[in-house]
Amino acid sequence: MSRKPIVTNVWTLTIFRSGGYAQESNVENAIFAFGRKTEEVEFHQKQNLPTGVIQILKESNLVDEALESGFVLELSKTKINSPGWFEFDRIFSSTKRKSCHGMGHWSQRASFGSVVGSGSFEMIPVDWSPSELPQKIWMRAVPLTDNRLAWVLGRGDILNSEPNEQSTLDDYFELGKIIPNQKKIDVIHLPGPPEKPYHFFID
Image (cartoon, rainbow, N blue to C red; front, side, top):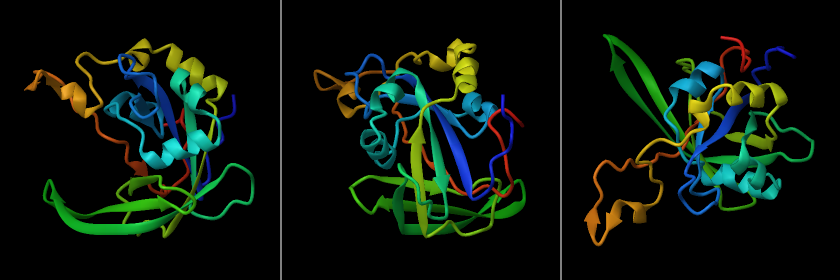
């Protein structure tokens, strides 16, 4: 098993199918667990995919594989001249100063749009990075590695859907009334460039 940390110009987000099975089987309604590392996959709330990632899956013919098990999203802040990479431009960004436990920090968020389609996503910085998010992002989707798949198969709770989950507006309503205990599913915000190399299996 290779455990060489990735370089900071290219980083990964591992995404596992983890819910939405009661819905019509399509990638728009499917729910996913995700994280840069194993601990993040177990910690993050399960969410839907942004349209930019869905566009990449469709263009890469990986939708069926994503719905069956998941995939790895590779991100880069520099252009990579090899097949399968998709370019996104930053179209909006905001910065806000927040206070946490008496310490101030800057909270950033940026929206990116595809240069060849209508897909988009939001990105947030990680590791308390003060750096501005890039003007451009390149991304591609690749199948799960065997070691990632073996890891998630050993943790059935990640693959199981959560009770009372819902992912479409129609699921809120039954004969015009709101169904109690339904949970609205958020959309994944992609992580910005890391400050230092990391690997999925290394804390």
